[in-house]
Image 1 (cartoon, rainbow, N blue to C red):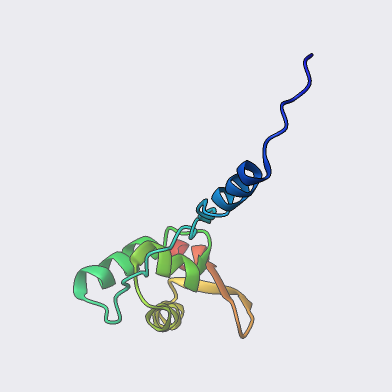
Image 2 (cartoon, rainbow, N blue to C red):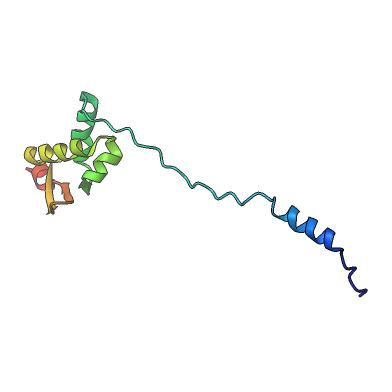
Length: 110
């Protein structure tokens, strides 16, 4: 292998100066999740769907209602209280932060 040819000091300085002008790496901004537009009022079709479909769910929580019916969290909590009073669902765990319900099978059989 032949020896490398030594570059002049001027060539080295020019190469060093040119190297600093390279653009910096662009980091990705990440994926931005769209803000959900959930209903804050319950209209009649949503209420009918709520009464009809919730009785078939094995697990009923605030999160499930928000996801499936596209309603606000406060609306989902109010709906759970109303469905419990009607006897459509029954509580499994009544923690202050997470209310967990299931369908009331005994009420359907009577």
